[in-house]
Amino acid sequence: MSDDRSIHDLLERAVRDYSPATADPERAVLARARRERRRSVLLTVAATLAVVLGGAGILNVVDTRTRGDGPAAGPGQ
Amino acid sequence: MEGFSEFVGSRYPALVRYGVLLTGDRGHGEDLVQSALVKTYRAWGRLHPDGQPEAYTRTVMERLAWRMVRRRWRGELPTAELPDRPDDSDDYAAKDEAEAVLAALRTLPAQQRIVLVLRYWAGLSESEIAERLGCSTGTVKSRASRAVAFLRASRLLNDVQQTMGARR
Image 1 (spheres, rainbow over the protein chains, first blue to last red):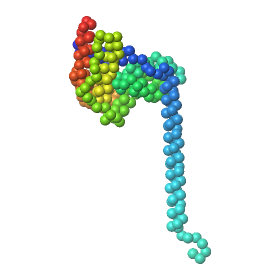
Image 2 (cartoon, chains in turn blue, red):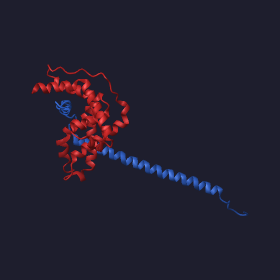
Image 3 (cartoon, one colour):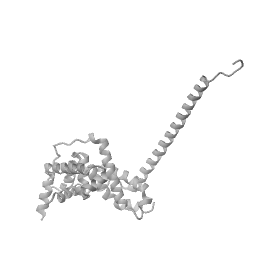
Image 4 (cartoon, rainbow over the protein chains, first blue to last red):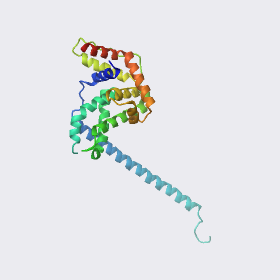
């Protein structure tokens, strides 16, 4: 007998009588899809916040340094 | 979503059996199927009614399993010791046998197991497997050959050949 056939039969024996444990697979899949969607939205929000806050921080530093280095304003100068 | 419920209802058991073989584990197999079905659900607009949702889901499962291997490759180590093989004389022989085969599959390094399942269970050619998994044909050949050598050494393959020969 060929290996192809006997290996197929061997694998078949491993799962022939197996029934899934999940009673309502569609519900489980939809719940997982919702969870993944929520996680993805949260990650996007967190990334956006990080960019905005980081950008604001950098602008603030640049602004402070520019003011410090610039010519002092005022009478007599 | 139209058609998705029917698709999952009718094909879930077969997909889970495929997942169990790809992972060598019932829990991980079902988890793999559900992860793949989430992607199928998102792509459902393209897959229904004219696409091939089952083929799509199976390909996603194969790629997810292959990618997981790369991340957890060191988690699975081959061993020469195999679990007890079943005795045909009791009523639970079929379940014991299934467990023995699954245990042997778990013992295989995961890449070998995946190639074995795609080659001998799904009936794909070496070039088709290489294309699906994004690896070379040489990799597929070497993994398949090592997996078959392992099954021969484990004597599980001999048992199957003897049983099938006796049935004739």
